[in-house]
Image (tube, rainbow, N blue to C red):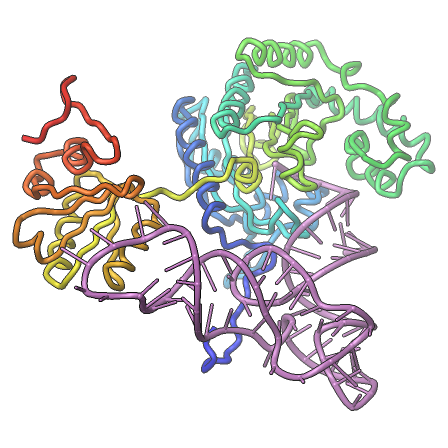
Length: 451
RNA sequence: GCGAUCGUAGCUCAGUUGGUUAGAGCGCCGGUUUGUGGUACCGGAGGUCGCGGGUUCAAACCCCGUCGAUCGCCCCA
């Protein structure tokens, strides 16, 4: 914002975000936690393209869904091919599974994270470029796969320290079940079509299942008596769902049955689930009008719609921004030591010392601007444990001044042990800090003493 | 895509019924003697009041448009 350059500053694209500070720390914390947990569950990392041929999404997700019909960022490339910025991970992963012959690794557990794009009206917790963590188990028809996948989701949320969120679980049955139930719903709601909300009259044509979770009171009075999925479940579908729920109980994951939970995308079969904040909880308040933080289900028919062999699979995705909103405020990392050189000679010396300390694995920064007072101010503002002061006197004497910031205590230390590369982080830290501000270090059970 | 609210310094906001050089707190920069932070005191920079147009002698304030954010619907992570 310079006065001499009145050139217009371009603004960010609507619905995109520049994430910084505490928000960026929370974002990183979500990703790091996910990466750690996915390794515990032995999910393999995959990296996927950010764009695909448009048909990958339109065929996999379903032409009539909102995502495909009005929310995709599609464009023609220079070869006049229609490409689309990924609105979700699953379709692209399914495509990769088929085109790369990953069948040889079946059953395959994969995890990834990154940006997704959806042309929607931005709101709190909802962006045009947003980010998800994602986990899939491909070529596993067993309910144990659903259980493992959900237990992992639960652990990620727990390790993030998020509370007040519950797993809502439902079954959509197998293909036949789903079709029979759908037909029953169309008949039931069709009989009272004129009394339904405008939205639901439209849903009757496009996606009758969605009428079940309409919030409009005109619809709600009919929803209670609508045909229930349970009445249409085949024996196999019922047994499958029971295996999943008893598995959740055994894994110690709390869940509630959500009969009207139907997911928007065409490919879901059997298990469907969402982690949703409890009504009135702190988590619900932080999310604005968004509710689902993690959602997914089983998609046994998806591979076929892309031209692959029938391949059962389950997966979920969670919004990183939404999870980050529920994570307690995260502070940036603090340095342990801030070096404050005073004088040109000291500048050079400290450039060497700080490299040595960092190679040992100590978190260090250097204050190189302003006079000594300014440098101390900056060091203090960084939240460092201690300042290492080096001036002409110290250079001459082969010493270094350590000042413990919280207590204000300081001491003069010999530089040899600190500089020596054969001394590790723990030993070096002890050499610098022992005895200052009440800090005590020990060595083989005895009080610390430098060699 | 529909309905509504809002938009003043880096941040949080004040600005009376339209009236002279638009304010505060925090933050930032500098100073209160030479190599020592956190507290205190002093000083300074920074805004064409989101942008464009209109009404008026006069607009941050009124009107229209536009962009953006937020809330509800829709949908979803």
